[in-house]
Image (cartoon, rainbow over all chains, first blue to last red; front, top):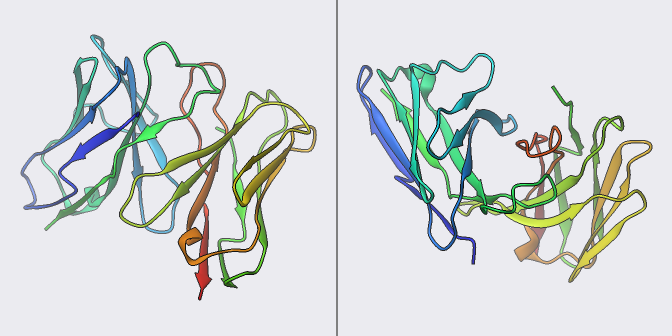
Length: 119
Length: 112
């Protein structure tokens, strides 16, 4: 159990276009999902916390108008990279905790990630 | 922001060797420490969540210990196998119901 599906796994887009990444919890509900980004040889860096039915909480330095997050249901969060530029090329990965198991000692369940390349 | 350090960054061992690596984190205001295994082209998989000082957890050939007073955790793999090749990540949460802060990971390669 606790499967998270992330789509697409790989996307190449042109500079100035927008890209939407979906994160679905397949067999559990997730009130909270987390979006991370990883640059080469760096750690997973938290971008934002996605909350079902409310606005996402963005980390310092992450532009909320550029990285739009929507968490419209208990099983789906989306990250849209708007007006993408080559510097947005990165690996994006989502994770979720089961609703009702949001404490610090509950593990995160991850998607497979999305490799975004902006040309 | 929590500073999480993992060492070594990468490790190459022969099949059958035992190995261990370290995760260091701030010892103040400790809540828990998570360990994940991340195989290429797969999603990170939770190995352990540790909360108590002196805790030791085991899953097959993999075990982990925790020292919250000095702020470190060791992950041990006994008799490494090629399928153990992965990046091992540790992450403490900031606290409460908060996201995890990840180290850069230790990339383990087990050579048959």
